[in-house]
Image 1 (spheres, rainbow, N blue to C red):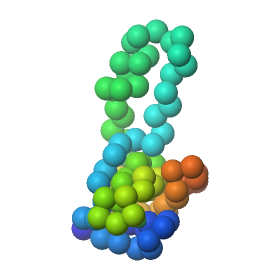
Image 2: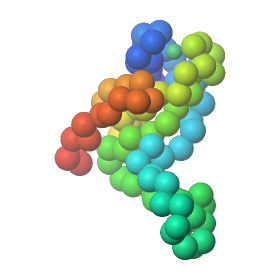
Image 3: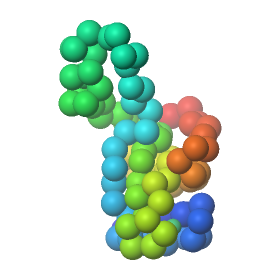
Length: 91
Ligand SMILES: [Zn+2]
């Protein structure tokens, strides 16, 4: 169990949140080949170290937030609203 600092509600238990995926994946342009869209939807990296992720605060404000989490230690490096950005430290 770890604590995620919601930018709207403050620090809350991870149980109040739902993981929503990789926040670094970029949607391909509209004229990209089908395989690029398939990779965008289905192919996921399994990074080791700091990673920016989407989390939804389903037990609170229901907002989507970006969370910087270390995938090995579950340490939280920060959070930001969906339109914000997070600086990823070197792993
Ligand atoms: Zn919240």
